[in-house]
Length: 399
Image (tube, rainbow, N blue to C red; front, side, top):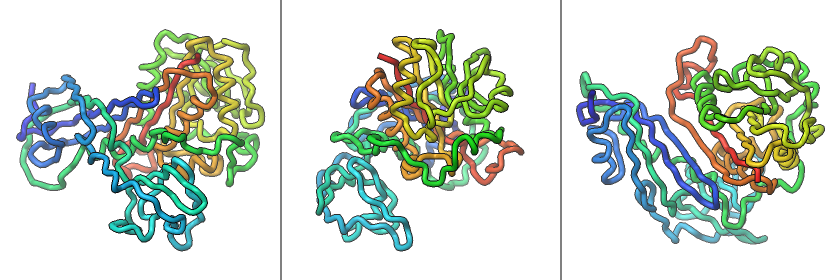
């Protein structure tokens, strides 16, 4: 079996594992055509990868500063609110405690230009000033890197080309789901608004049997459920449609908005039509299920905390709730805040749904990115988009 060397190429799945505030995080990136002769890795990591073969796995502990720059307190600064500006012609944005924004929105700060899209966080604020942190969102974190070669093969030629920093790609985003030490203000004290939304019942009266993500993303979603659902027999598919993305052999009770869609879903043993935005109370008895899943729909909930409390009610103690989402949705149905957040901030938002409901423990998150997009004549985004749609998941157990 071929081992990784400077004379080979490899497809490697890198997984970053870390924990903070009682939440376990796992973030993976599929690195395609890794070339040790050309690509860049942090000090010492290349030696760990050399000699590995497909099917092997290795874990490495990363100290703060090993994979992103160390925290620099000079990058924590106080600026006037007037320094926070959006480009001319863009909608007004009001800075909010704990939220992330592109650094280019800060004007008059040395070394920051309007084109800079690297994130900064608002960590404190008053009527006149903002305290902002321009450090990498993962700057002070200890983590563990898992290296899983999936395929290794000899090079046929070496043409140079683009140099890749795979660990930089892996770490670009996950830190944005970190909870601010003061708490991140997502505005959950009131129902979330849908600025473009039409009446839910009217919208969902028409079946929409479309694939919301590409086939590789659907496979990755099924893997999430295959990992988490073994042993769980009474499953509720919340906000169900014509696809549940469940692994083969797993069935569920469906609750959704369109009877025709659910009746064509082979994974559903039964279904109920119910509008959670009109009535968050679930039409099921206490402890009726041992697992609740929701695929690609959590972004439509206007009263998520009420719904999560109901999820906890219909789950048995220790029951599992899994929310899976991507970066595609019906634009006129998603709540406003969902459309304003970075995809990793959305993972932080969904984590707060679990946390703020007060009824879940053992919270975890997962992200899967970088997978190649399969050739599919039914996929209108292929070949314009080369990567598969990202998959994010947040789950927890009832207390």
